[in-house]
Image 1 (spheres, rainbow, N blue to C red):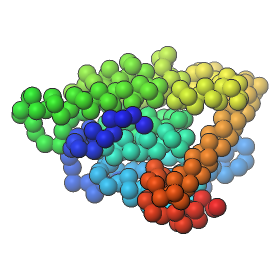
Image 2 (image 1 turned 30 degrees about the vertical axis):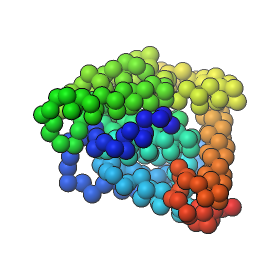
Image 3 (image 1 turned 45 degrees about the horizontal axis):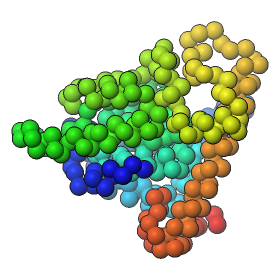
Image 4 (image 1 turned 180 degrees about the vertical axis):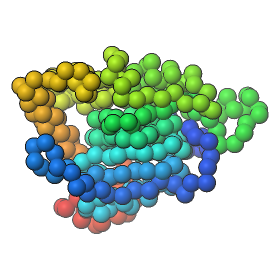
Length: 288
């Protein structure tokens, strides 16, 4: 996590026009879907709604349930118009350190994009879209100097974080040049038609680790085959094997992360994944 988080904690900064939302909702989803290989689709965690202060602590309580925790490790589906940058950065930090896979099937706008960037394996499903614009404050700010002092350091820190996560500079620049009253949208088609699809898909350290363990990704332009001639059976089999291998690498590291978080709680220290002082509940949720 970048050092700027401490600075973010003191600022009421968001990437969304304020609304009457009550904050994000979290739920575990058990899909009734059969995959091509005949197996059932794994459960996952759905995060939906505007991200507001306090949501991250609620989410850590949510993870104290074993089923919720292991569904979270499978993957997270994000649906959000945006919200508070502080909370978004906390979620992103957890996703990054926990080696979490994230997907978007509808929309993930504004500060939700920061959460998306925190994932190590990131994808758009179907009509899913991302949306970015530059950071704004909660209140109307007519004092330009004050607004600059409040926003500029945070905008710089967020940009640095996105670049660290492997988000291409062209998208970071689009975020910073798009007014807060507008939205620059990114969909599956625009990604697969560009040269940045693979860079958006995986965080740098994760994909480098997977390359060493599983070999290079046999599908360097993920999803492009949907609109082009399908891959032959041999290539599709290679892609499937690589995906299974990469997921094993991810889950192995996720479990190591949870054990390290449990050790932090046992030592009386703060944890990223679990609420402070909840060692016994966290231990049971992990199954230790």
